[in-house]
Image (cartoon, rainbow, N blue to C red; front, side, top):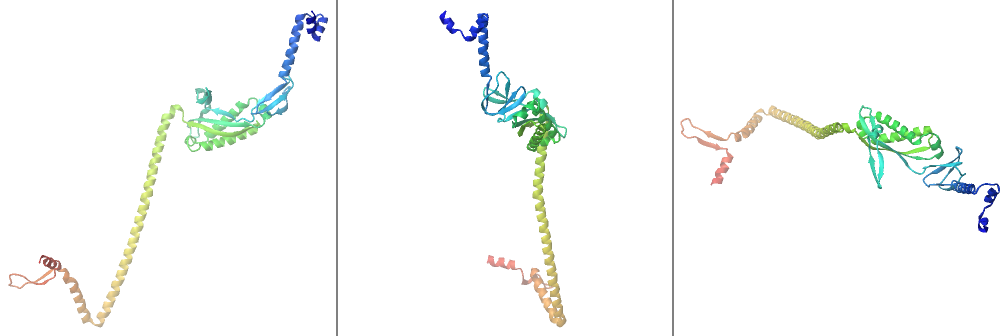
Length: 338
């Protein structure tokens, strides 16, 4: 009895003195202990290094706290909402990244086509998969400017991307303008989010994959092959043109230069002949007999070597008598035979 009296707490003595039963005393004691323990556990909260904690009291923001252990009023009088301000957040469109057993893989399901199928400016349907990467710089604005932050960012991103793709040609989006489209999308999404004062900044927009829809891929591949064949033929024609035209221009220049040279030669020759004829005419006027004889001898000297063998034949002779053997080639052959 002495031990049991020593273990009785003042609260129990008070309750017994007021006629409260022992079972109720035990219940009240347990509730008191639970109250104290709950109050102790709910009076502190820890903020991870990846973000900030927005502390609200009865729905009103009273503080924004950084990483570490912090005190707050217990029993949810003060509530802390964690916002990952130091983490790069990602929204995926047209596919989802799934982690299985530590391995990351991309999954594309039929419901994802509602996000990725788009109509281009030339009325072509293409499948655009893209990623929006952003970071929260103001935790208060991020929590309170819009109701559903993630869905708002997704809706804005999808609207902007559909508008940009709808103003471009399908072939351009599939090939050379992918980087340009991504850059334009990043700027316009950033501008739209700033107008909502959402407290986020867009870091990057990247087109993950741009392909034609699965049903039209065979036809699209045939079109690509035809375009590649056209480009190949155009390139070959350009190559041939770059070879033929300079060659033809070179030949034309050569012919023109040869014609000019020939014309110059003929002119100079004609002038020389004219001057020679004029000089002979002057000599002829001075001494006609001598000049006539000299011209005759010069002509005979020029013509006779080209006549070949010359024979003087008598009227009644049987065999011709060779007077002059001007065939030098025949003479040389006879000398070589001797």
